[in-house]
Length: 159
Length: 405
Image 1 (cartoon, each protein chain N blue to C red):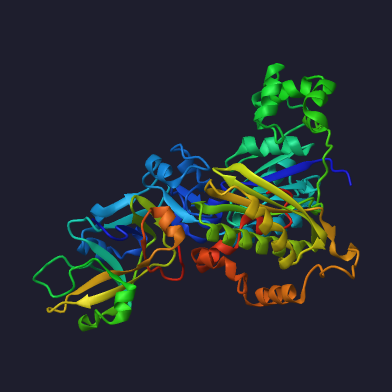
Image 2 (cartoon, one colour; image 1 turned 90 degrees about the vertical axis):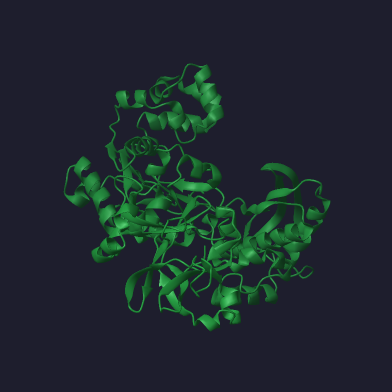
């Protein structure tokens, strides 16, 4: 069972061509109508889950959470903002990051994201970075809209 | 002042267009704007409409019809900004403009050709282009000798079209079902169909007195307007309200008495704001409670003196709430102020509480300065999720000056 925003898209023109090529993102391009902009899809259920993140002054494509047991980054996709605030993840030295997104997907409902989503980055024993989406209890509106009681921490807005 | 040509400008899928003004990524995307609770589609783009999604559809049905549609939270404050920009732009090309609704305006089009130094049709297109360039919203425009014909024209021209209608417009009126007329609802249309009146041309050619008998003087006004004789002038300011109501959905059905009281108190506070805005006092207060959108209970109480005091209105509403049946879950409610009287025309009294107490005034001043509901009744605390989200604080009815909802 997935417990969070299960996908996002970002405008195709916002992603540098070298990143599209390096991560083979062409196969993830979608277009909602003939006149709509092309978008790049990032789903949690992708074989190689990734997220576009603004980190260290540039857009990077990083692994979305960790699902490898031989890696010492947390085995999760997301992090509750209250958990992070409690210091429970401080042993991993989390760093703030901004997940870039135009649209989000939750339980089959696509919704608009104005600026992005707050995320946190954790490095494993090999200094490889992983990005985790920050979650919070959902607002009444978000809960009615998507039917789910957790929502991402959005940048500059509340849904 | 008489107007020889009426214009009607109607923004295409207005809420979605407003969202597209500030979010380029929504252009071309099947898009729906969700209402106050996030449950229902209140506006949709033409791309979404093509999938069969209609206004009022719940999101769980809409997402089945169009799984890749994007849904946006409504933002009435932004829509008002765009609406007022459109109004101001229109005032630069027309001497008379009526703010009919948030996305529709009537205007005096008799100077339009001179204003753009172009023939009428080209001038209308130039106005459409001007709106698109300066505001970013696509509009459809109808120009005709009467406002009914102008509105029919803009409706028929949608999306992003213009239509100039002459007084003699038989083919056009023959193509328009009578139900398209603004003011002819389902019941009136059925009455007309029974008399073999199916198109706007049939209506125009029908016996005037028969129409008057059937649909009253309002129906007759439409009959004249369809003949190109303008009988309804452009109104540049809204006539005084006969009643002011605040209310709506209770965010889902509830039988919880604390939540019901909280919604009542929230709506009283919203009503008092509206009374303050319009500078009137209420002589009567009504409470309507709905279960499944069907009126369950309606109480009406006269106030001892016209008032906009929280205490007075609260004391009038709460006994009505106590008397309401409690065995049905409440889905909607409205609090209605009637017998309105201008504040500067009130009879002073020695024996009753002031129409507004110093506490009411202080609450008003603080909320003006610090933001809406910065000070509110503690009885609204059960609605923490509503007050936690500031976007719930501005609704379509808070946009003042419009002729209709």
